[in-house]
Amino acid sequence: DVKVTQSSRYLVKRTGEKVFLECVQDMDHENMFWYRQDPGLGLRLIYFSYDVKMKEKGDIPEGYSVSREKKERFSLILESASTNQTSMYLCASSLRGTAGKRTDTQYFGPGTRLTVL
Amino acid sequence: AQSVAQPEDQVNVAEGNPLTVKCTYSVSGNPYLFWYVQYPNRGLQFLLKYITGDNLVKGSYGFEAEFNKSQTSFHLKKPSALVSDSALYFCAVRGMNTGFQKLVFGTGTRLLVSP
Image (tube, rainbow over all chains, first blue to last red; front, side, top):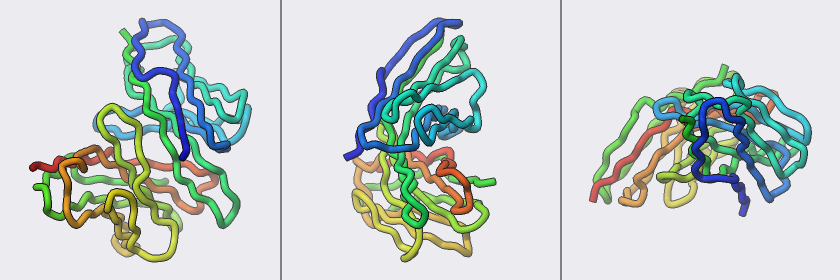
């Protein structure tokens, strides 16, 4: 089974702090994703990565950055946390596959509920 | 642009009755369609997907979904609901013509199964 782990289940930070959210997957997946989940808005893509050191902006990248130094690890960074970044953060990974054999199934971690005071 | 609509914020059903959670989509080209379930304070779990082939897709926990191209729908169904099915359900889509394997998620439908 695919296992995606996130460093914290719950996190409380103060406004202006730098926050690191870590995600690790153990299935050698090329693609990794960071989402935030808010009531009534569903999941919104922040950033994704399709290879080591590669990153692409998602739909709501403002206020966030990411790092992917190793294939299994994808970090989300809040450079200066703000109260509007209080949310549930979900990491996911998927196998790239090959043309004609793509699966696209994303596997999710348990989430980190971040509160910024 | 890709989009997904889940028109119901909440669906209520009695245990033992059939359930349907609705999803419609918009993509250019043929779609890849997914259903995920989220239990309280947990991440999303994959339920089932449609890539190609038979329009009726069977997934985990007795769930199934029917792909209807003419109505651009992918409704989730189960013949007999269980109280333990109570959760938040998300539909997601990706267009085959999309260059990268991003999914677009709906806003979610909360399913409440009463005893």
